Amino acid sequence: MDVLWSPWRYDYIKNGEQKPAADSSGCVFCDILKSSASDKEKYILYRAEHNFVILNIYPYISGHLMIVPFSHIADLDRAEKAITDELMDLTKLCQKALREAYQPNGFNLGMNLGKAGGAGVAEHFHMHILPRWVGDANFMTAVGETRTIPESLQTSYEKLKDKF
Image (cartoon, rainbow, N blue to C red; front, side, top):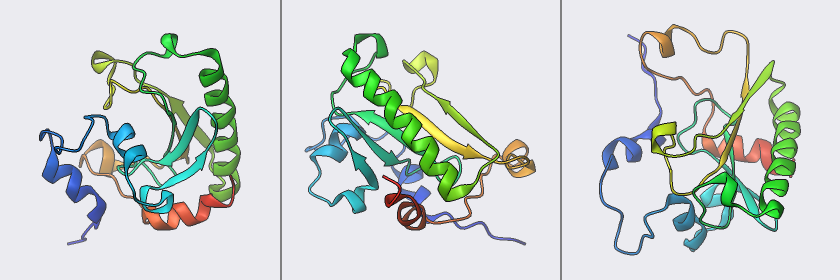
């Protein structure tokens, strides 16, 4: 039997829908920004004026990035133009960085707004961008409901950090 090892998922599985810690704002992105850990420990690749770029710690695939506003805003249409303009500029920068680092065949790009829209963090909107390859969604995802991630988050961070 083959063993798939993804230790970073344990915290996600273990914590599930638990209440936030006492010092938590209840928003994972705001808590990351409040944390005294280094950007490297938080997997923050880049900080701009209004947004930051971070690795998704529960990635769909290696190189799964998110562009997140510093401001705690749930709805895209409520964000100031400067925030959304910069968010799109950073999305373009992320695409370039992912292309250079991973040479993918394509990209997935998007955001889910509101719980009904599928947002995992509905109270703080963010953009996802991830590299894709022909055939990367194989039987493991379709039948086994399991994803295989070929590199650690630390490796992804090191591969991408100098692209920003």
